[in-house]
Image (cartoon, rainbow, N blue to C red; front, side, top):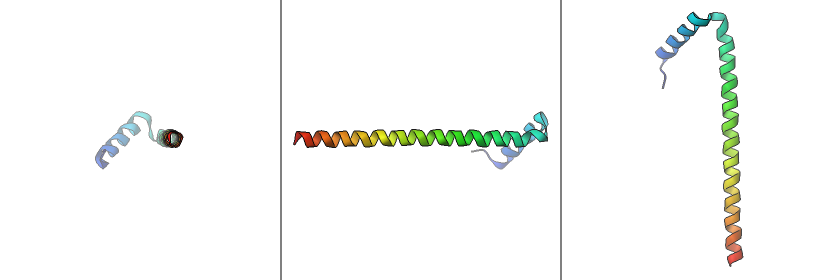
Length: 67
């Protein structure tokens, strides 16, 4: 985990390299990237759940046909 001191140092380096006016743009881009990442993770989770449900349904159908 990144501690408070590390975050402050990183922010200081960013300000020195890009200037204070670039910070809002960086924060906005990081927020957008996180939203896209979360959206992708949710889609992958939903797809996995759908496939698991389909597999369970197929297994139950196979069991019923055998009986």
